[in-house]
Image 1 (tube, rainbow, N blue to C red):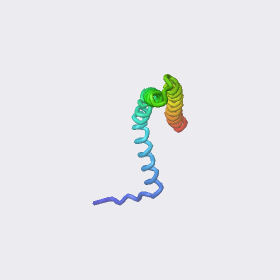
Image 2: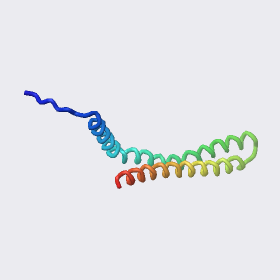
Image 3: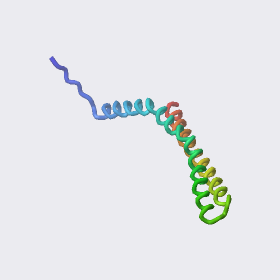
Image 4: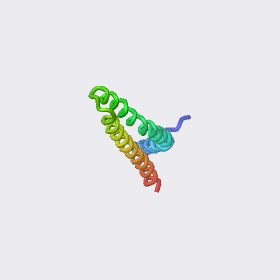
Length: 102
């Protein structure tokens, strides 16, 4: 004979939210790894793009290292700025987990 179990809506929603939190915690390290794995690309691509565009502009206008140097510096600044944003996001995800766990 089957037993009927009464489950309230509130307890069911609580169980679902606990399950979602467990899944979020389980995959958090994968998300952070992916986020932090972008750092080498963020440091390399903007300066390389600055050099390529700068050399093209220097050849076009006949100004030997001017645009190359300027865009290289802007590339480094842009890369460092994006790395800082990625690290800040990864740190905030870690701090959010620690605050919820406490």
